[in-house]
Image 1 (spheres, one colour):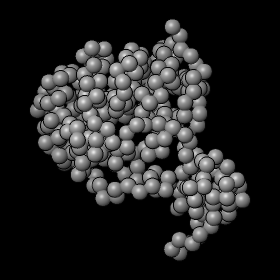
Image 2 (cartoon, one colour):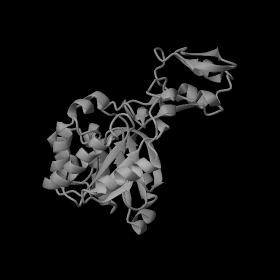
Image 3 (cartoon, rainbow, N blue to C red):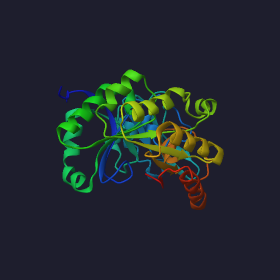
Image 4 (cartoon, one colour):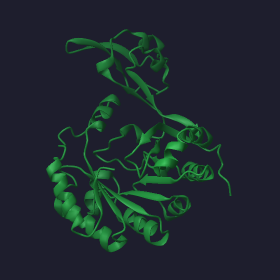
Length: 311
């Protein structure tokens, strides 16, 4: 069975020379569309499948070119505090991107482009030498890669056909059929564990965690795919020591001590992205201190697990 390289999905970034999405130097492909709505999401432009307009008001000079270019008449010039900027009525905007090419200051960007497996592969292959010599490969992330299983499966197959190692970064929220379909082509599974309490998991992400934890067990224990457990550490939500200890026990008891644990401290990248999409988020989330992250690391290592901060 060979990959169908004509399959398409919406990709919002292909990042090269990555060193945090698996071992070695990697190319990370980010797809759009996600069934979760994490309150701390670092990539809010990945939530919807379709391309989305992002507007960075600090770059805007209110030149008015975007006003003239918009076919929906969704853009106007308004005064905000001590300066004039362009304003987009999101109820009228169709995310067509016509205003993007008109903006000389690059204040407007269309996040997302429909791409075929073949187009993505052609970009990934350019860095094959770096990946091979460093022990790296391609990682597919999102969004949620299991939300577009046909594309993900065929991209993984195509990458293997090119002799490149694969990794998948996922929340693992999907049916067992999708898990089996995708992970037979995966060399390394980067599995997110966001909270061990299913009620709090539902409150913070929009979905419960029972299926997620069962899928991670299946991926590691039944499909025998190596797993790195990635734990986002979000102050006020899931970075308390009770939850982190519960997560460590799950990993040790249900998966085994061969699973690497990556503790991922909260960062503020998603805040500016939410603003560029015209959305609000919890601006009060604090970045955990380096000392606290080291405390968590030492605690998880106490369960016999290999731990790193970041990655």
